[in-house]
Every structure is written in C-alpha cells, then in structure tokens.
Length: 318
View 1 (tube, rainbow, N blue to C red):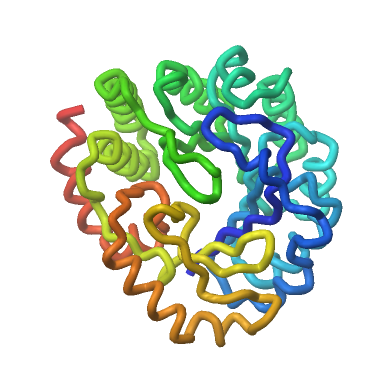
View 2 (cartoon, rainbow, N blue to C red):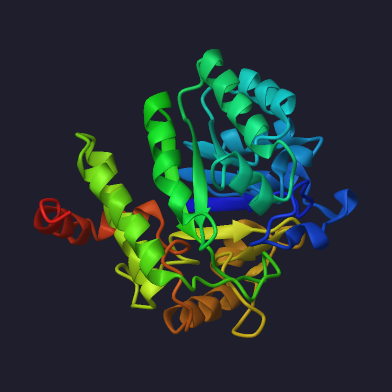
C-alpha cells in the first residue's frame, strides 16, 4: 500500500496551475508528527505539500514515517537547499523529487518565483555530490511548457537522475478548476517524442514509463484510463489537518469526502469503517478521468500484463 502525506498547504511558489498558496494552513492546525505513528506499514510514502520544507519539524516527520514505510520520497520545489540537505544528511536512504516546470524562463514564470530553476538545479547537484541515490525531478505538462519536456528529460538523463511527468488537472487540493490542455496535438506530439526517447534506452523501467506517458496521452485526449483507479484501496492521502482521503483529485463540484480524521480515530478504524466503504464505492463510479492520480505502483503490478503487452506491440512503432 502507498500513501501521500500533504504536510502543509503553505507554499513559497505562486504556480499558475495551483492556487494552494492562496489558501495556506496555519502551522498550529497542521497534523503533528506523532500522529503519523498511526499509519500502517507502507511500501511507499510520498511526503509533499505545499512546500514540505516550510515545516520546521520536517525532519521529525521523516523520522516517524521512516519507521512505517519501506521507501520515502519527498516532493519539493527545491528552493530551500540548506534545509533539504540537512534532512538528506540525517536520512541518506530517502528520495527527493524536485518540481521543475521547464527551462529557466518557463520554470520561473510558471512557478511564480524568481531563480526557482537555479535553486532547484543547485539542490539536485548538491544532493548528487552528497551521494544521495534516489533523486530526480519532474514536470507537470501544460500548453505552456510541453516543448521543454524533452530538454528536461535530456538534462535528467545526462545527470543520471530520475525524470517524472504528469499533466495539469483540477482539484480541490489546488483550488483550481480551469486547468486544461487546449493545444492537444502539440502536447501529444511532445509526449510521443518522450516515449520514443524512453524506448531508445535499455532500461526496462523506462519502457514502463513510456506506458505511463502513453496513459497521459489518453488523459489529454479525454479517453478512458488504461488501468483501473484503486484510489482509497491501494493508496490514500492524508491532508495537513489529518483527513484521510482516497486521492488528491477530488473536486467539490463533483464529489469530495473524507474517510475520517487521524486526530479523532486510529487508522485501522478509519480504513475499515463504513465511511471508507462508502468512499470506495464512489471511487468505482467516479466521473473524473485522472490517469496520473490513481495509478499507484501496486495497480501497475497487479495489471502488469497490460503494460507488458503494450510494450511488446508498440516499442518498434515508436
């Protein structure tokens, strides 16, 4: 099972595709590190935000979750280099993923922060020099930055870093309901080029990433998702106030519901409760088509024959 912990809604960026910075949590209302002791045993945990390194107790949060999860990856904008390095020095087996939305001009415009690209790249270089193995960066693709995707992939490849992709979408989490991709053909062409690049490598992991990006093409086209959504079953989110949610793609205008709050109940009571069962039924009938949200690694493993069959039949085509 996998989890994502949204540690805070505070953020130092002013991203075009996310308005979370306009709705920050207060530090005193954010879930305390000790409450993460309630989490179950996890295969993977993503620590995210807002900007998680705005929390003064981020190292304590990592210390607690390390006892619960086989693998931890922190998602950050990479701006607070010294804070990130300090946590990495204490916990050398964690992963760090830095959000970079394009080459310098595009990144800083989209993220609404001066010198954001420089800070992110410097943080990556320092982590690499420190010897941290599980590091990389990712892009959230939109009309405004799709053309930078291949250059960023080449940068990651040359630096021997992991490279992840997603596509803009709407959510209560981002307080955004007008994200859309209008230049569909251009964006799809960029994804297809990335798929070709991934297939040209000898890393089998990259071939599965090609399948994931093929799923993003389906998402952009408005087609049904390639794998079933198991949000609230294989994976879950915990928000800064302790609410246990099936995913981060919920919308108030569609549906938005919590399984329960860790401040009030234990995780097992929440996970096995009637409210959780109701939400899993809602997930089965969810009208949203969020390929990137509900595609957790356990789902990919369970339906492994689907990406394998696609890879066998499409590697030469791309």
